[in-house]
Length: 430
Image (spheres, helix red, strand yellow):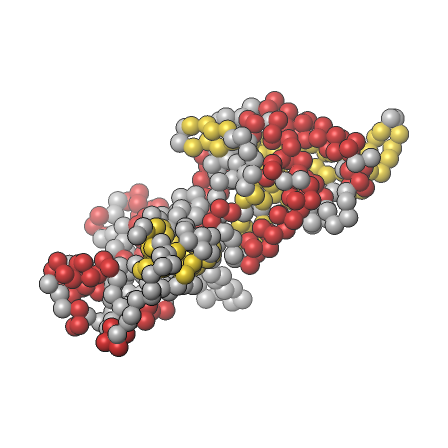
């Protein structure tokens, strides 16, 4: 009989841990490959983990509602033997406590009587941490979100010493910040210069009890966005090229039910197939170009921004891309993205054209990509054509590029090629 492991994958740039929220299946359940079996939360979104093979859930190794490191085996699926009968479970076995395989092996090796162990897992399941606590090895891993763990690591705080005030003892950001606020350097170790700087810092600290002011909590997603984009703005030397393009005839020729946003995505894909320098990523000093366009689309959600990825967007027709993009945007807003829609993007489009007052804007590159296209509102504007003044529907497109690997002429060539694809699209629909 063969087994397949369900592991926690990397759900995004720089992810080290995720939060296992809930199991949608239990041991003994039949599953099909691609069927959702659990829900996991990263810094960016909640996603569903899918079965990696057809079979039966053999064991769940990590209970719900706790942080998990990337790469951890969460559960195992065994191949289904349709000719065999289901196992007979005795009444005594039904009353026996549920124990993870790792806990069983550890208890056997250390001679621990599991009948005296109180399980802390889902439905009283005995976990590895429970057995370790009995034998005096290590204590249960502190419960904290990935962003909270990073904050503690950055300030060298041992989370095992922090008392969590959240649900089930979860350590919240406020718990770590409370410790940071109590840390101070002894007066005898502070130099005159440090004292002066400390005085200036005191002046810049937020005042307390200011009438009409309240502190607004910063969501985990917003903190992740801040880290990611700060890194991009710091490490990637951005430069910008802008073009005003005429969409009048193309928009008039669009099939019913397809809007300008889909048209822009479609033309971006067509352009990238010819401008491969921008369909690329720059990772740790290595530049990679891609044969297929995995197009990321910036989507505004509550408390932040997601960039779900249209894998192999170059395989879709205009209508197919319209349907696929609507589907992925809806899932992003409902927090139900699939794993392959969370990463792997090779280029990003950010369209604020839905706000008619936004003529143009610049966007920060989504690392490790090397460029991002920002699209303003398509609306009537005066245009000089053949020596006369006309009112045409135009939009400003601004390309942000990473100057480490992209030069100005390459960026300008992208916008030129985009305009050529736009006019070619008009001709094909006349």
